[in-house]
Image (cartoon, rainbow, N blue to C red; front, side):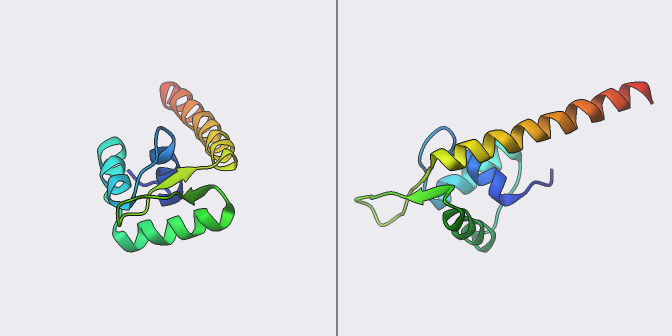
Length: 96
């Protein structure tokens, strides 16, 4: 599967806060995608700039991230759009 790293990260954070390695493992499990550290942290930086995720305090050396309200809205909009594409594609395949 090919997917935009930012969308995968937002989906990973939708259920709970996670640090980078936990996101990489979660994404590998739910999407079958292995994100490299460079790709992951580059996307995290862009998501922070957009205000869609934010780092949270941790007693541990790892920095967890949290989905913001704006990030949740963006994720919902993107997933709704993908749902429409999937529906149209499946309908067209059934008629082919």
